[in-house]
Image (tube, rainbow, N blue to C red; front, side):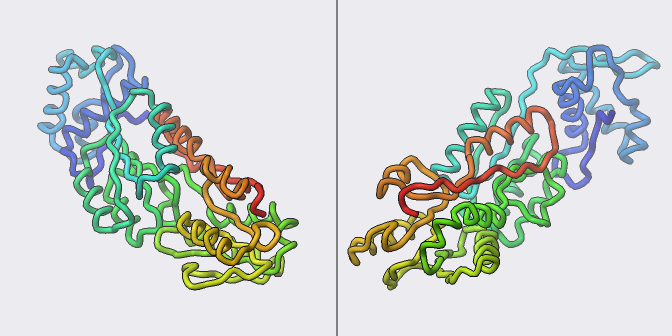
Length: 332
């Protein structure tokens, strides 16, 4: 059972990493009262660091009343009754109702067992890199929403590997990290498959995909479904300057485009369901009542926050795909 870990790439001084390792081991009950710590010589040989560095860490732990020493025998755990509070770095892409659900569920499940600092990169790579670089070494856990930012993986890999968790979107470059994420390819494909019988009543499927912050997996899942089931289809980057043709179904990840389509239907005096259909992305209370109910493809965002918090509290390293579903309402 490994007690002390040192990350040579971390900006946190090595003696502080030793202190933190011992505190974490006690907090996670891997070390009990009177258990012996690894010897100074063993830590020296394993990590190639000086005796002075290790003694500095052990002396600090002694001053805090956490360990004690016996001359000629070594260092032992003195107290497990000390205040240890994890500091969690939480980096979101933006604040919206869905991210609020994740955050509130995460906060509720953590239940005061950690200090949580939340930041937002707003899909700006320079801001993403700046926030991570400035926080590196200052937190016990790092939760990152990389979205589809090019180069995000290389920045994330500067953080201590064992302390990083990925949220919402992951990819092959981040496959080594634990995560709670959505599979946007399969979510789109499975949702459209579930609604296939209703979709067959229309002539064409249209995905409105601006591509700025929406996951490219949505496009892949959409194209996979349309190809396999021979649906006439089109992908639009925006809905501007376009009429709705009868028999079209719009799959709409962005709520601004949802409003634009609904407004245009009023201008053309078209009736939803009878003349055209809508599938929106990410469910909200408002979508339950607009137009007597908008059909959505949505994951459970509160569950995402809960699962991540439990993973951290239980010190688990898993890759969990958060479930998604097609919620059928009056717009299809």
